[in-house]
Image (cartoon, rainbow, N blue to C red):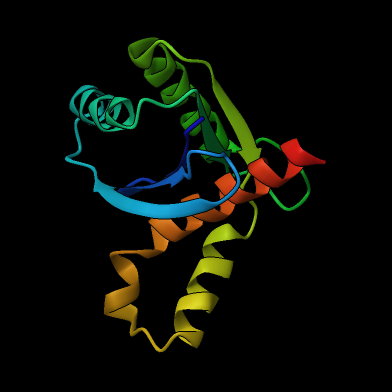
Length: 138
């Protein structure tokens, strides 16, 4: 039962995947947007379907007060289009502070800012996915 996790950003999209048992999330790759929504969604759909997931979990940037702000509206709109392309419902997960947690972990690991840029989104996606996997076991 593989599950894919996504951290949707304006420039990059982090992708993580679970192990086949659905217990552990692992950062997979960072997908760089080309700036054309249709092309980005099509390419992302291809990448997701390569994993043959049973579910897709995407982080939604809810504000610290719990409100759905402008960026969350954009993400939810893109997820609706992506869901139609891959033929799977995309479940959402609160992603508050995941990028900050991923950046802190990379800093502790000794990664420079330049090194962090290419992997922080995939690590954020893994945090989002792991949070969801853990909540499903409770």
